[in-house]
Image (cartoon, rainbow over all chains, first blue to last red; front, side, top):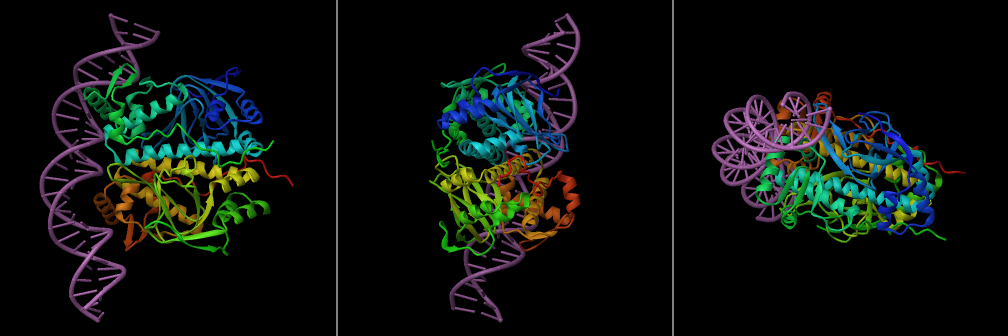
Length: 255
Length: 255
DNA sequence: CGCCTGTTTGAGAAGACTCAAAACGGGTGG
DNA sequence: CCACCCGTTTTGAGTCTTCTCAAACAGGCG
């Protein structure tokens, strides 16, 4: 279950570079620094662990392809999924302040990631302050995203929580997918979904069923189509924050 | 209700400097950079807003004294408190990636804060990479903290959620207070507490009453004493993460 | 074809919520 | 110094949502 495999060298464009270039134009130096850091790639297949709670961990990962999630396990045996990570996301930052990982990171689908040690990140912080700022802004955005989830779990009912989760996932997928899609593959079990939004799998099943009957969504195996996205947005007050991330407060590099 | 007052010049030691020095010894340059940034101080009295959701915001605040919280308001009118901020915390980072604030920041007690513009933070990132790294690590720690809260709300019952909140607050207070205390003033209404842990004020009242009867806590007005901290920790699986924050992955400054 | 995992459905129980009223307490003005 | 007032806390009764336990059902894979 544990451990990735197949170190290889990347040929494709780095996912983090593409992501950051949506927010600010990078200099050659900056791009090179990232490209260099993202050189080494690992594959994990769906279900494998990239990182395990309470285990020593010195690595960060940049998702190049596929999904991962990070979760916390409780003493009672239950689990809370904290966030999902997609292409261009930096994974494991929550463990950067401690030598033991604070949560377990699992591949949701087959994934390709590149590995980055903490000191490597430190070197980027030192040499490329603008990247440091951009990463700080992305971290802030992730904080806001988990705050959105917290708000939904703390203050909303089952249907709204599920609607919000689906809206959030599709909005994030659109960032990298490009173009407006209204359906996507959800490689999660209902147990996983419940662990993400704080419901039991039984109640997830019932509530998704209700939503389908009400015509909000449509399901086909793992494929989910949002039939009434507008309505779901109105129901939940969802705000898509993935479009813009401002980094202009970081001083531009001099030439 | 809105707007702080009384710009003045600080004489006391900057709270952020003291906090960071618990994690790494600062150079004179680093200390000066922060001292300079924290020069200007503002006072807010309990209940005043430092920042309001969906309003333009270019400022960050460093708490010097007292408490604040940040919260999100829903379309339905209800509210979710996301986090509390104490002396040495950087507030408003969640709004750093957008020009509109993502949440409302309110003074819980009377507070003294210093104001810092986003570009000022950018300049620190550029000139003091090690501070940037430390701030990144602190942001990561806050992410973990909100993850703990999310886990408790998503997967625990009322009593555990409340116990965890109290344990968390006292652990954080001990960082700046120094010395082991088992009681503290909680300047929150039960409505606030409920908004933080995802319960109604009525249920907060009932559950705190139960906890008092069971001998876990003792209340005297706003003062709360944890009579059975050990038991509460066992009940909730609480982990105090405030002691250590590692920043040694950031390259040391050269001389 | 059968197995295993995941999903659906049912019935009853538990936890948290709503509405409502009473009790408390700190602060203000007479 | 007392009486009153407002916001907060407590308590009660009844309801609703979500959970638990259990069994049936579906679908993909060897």
